[in-house]
Length: 190
Image 1 (cartoon, rainbow, N blue to C red):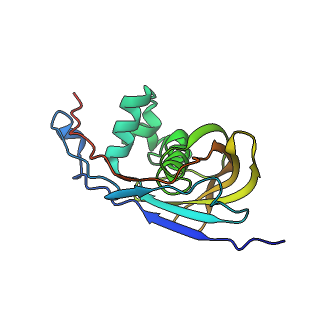
Image 2: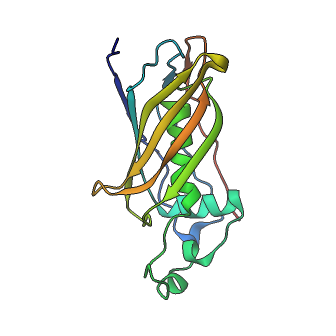
């Protein structure tokens, strides 16, 4: 018996103001991605279901990711240094692109209550400032034990080229829920 696949989608509408390097000591306020988050339970998910999540890489993303992760490789932060590399310009941390998969799983499908169990990633292309990435999730497999779901994961840029691919394993929620999305607090660096 073949199940009918369902598609879900969300665009990431981040309300940050641009953060030039000269303003690192000034705080900025983030807006919630969406006002409400609704999950999909293990029982609601079917093999072949798909979801997407879209986000554009901005200057502030490079700075915040470096601050949070401790990865201060000048390839991501120093335009002069980056110009001497094969990429000729700054690129995103690979893990930043991978973190968008986590956001898609947590916010879109399955959504709130999801427990991330594992992830394989293959980085295929660099991500540059201004690139718009779309995470594509597809339910590959379901296992009743622990409500485990395996997703095929792919991140593509605005040209439709794959930048990251892999698989993710999660424990999907058992109970249906809709929650208010938390507002992100002001963040000050420096």
